[in-house]
Image (tube, helix red, strand yellow):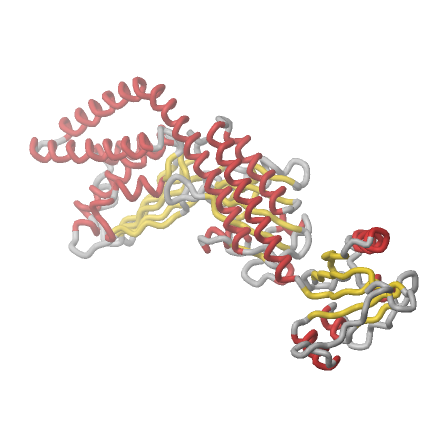
Length: 504
């Protein structure tokens, strides 16, 4: 109010009762303040303590009390607004945070007002304050979503044009770190042995970890829990997390909060896990996880695109070479089958079955571009005719395509033997198979496969001289330098231990 203002006379219908005004301000959560310019005197309505989340009676009526309640990062900006209002006479409006409260989110206050001059010439800066935390958080959330959408669109365009997959992963972890404002990001890829994940791209990790760091897939680790949950996992505080412990990698880097999502693979087997981590306690939201999942899906699509191109090139190179080998193998199987059989009809049936097994194995590994192939898929396709009568368990490991091809033939011979002498030849009989991957004390990696037929009535050496047994020994012992262990005391159990071949 200026010095020459004419006092307003209340009119009918306008409130003049101070108590009513104060009650309206309280219920509307609006506080009134009045600062006598160039002094330390500041007056508040009582409800401003509540609006500022101050303890009742803590405001002492001084400007210093208000200044002490400002967030250190916002104090200078608030004071600049005050000075500009006083010097220029422009309206005063600012949004600021109160002093940080441990363990609690920021409290945002909007203040608005202007300079008022009393009849005696005393100048005041007066106005109102209100809690606008919900509004500011909504605005911030909207800005984050817009930034995330723009980042996803830009990354998608980049991934479509970039032929080098490593650069695509590296760009992904940089975008995640920038948009979500976190110091640690990582992409973990499934190892072929399916017993751990490898840190193939990341930011913020100790020197030398990217490219060599390993994380377990057990439920106790965040990555392992994510794979089992098959959904995004948001960690509020790793120190109080009860679903899993978190790998030592995260504890070594002081991680407190984060998100992890699955990067889909080309089939049932995931490519890996995409994670972001903060050393501070952060409130990540579902929308943040959806953003990370969008990046992960683009990475997955790029991986499939790169793999498809690799497979196509490999198929062209392998076509002529493997066609010749295939014909030689067919000729060998035919010769051995017919020369060892006294019944022509039985020989034809055996040869037809073996040729079908060969075709199935070839189809499976060809579908993988004669690259590393899922052994579980070989088992499923080869033994499909027996359905649930065969129980198969083991990690979803990747094997050299040649080994997968040969194991398809071996599985066929074992199933044929069981049809003649074992459980598969009975109406309700069943067979158990299991495979594992292990690392020996000397560092040797071993692929172990076990076939267990509890109802086999075959004599210990009943099939040892047949072509099927010769084929199994030739493939396992001679070609792959593995060992065969047979037990016949109770049923028929066969185990192969094969040095784990390098990826194809």
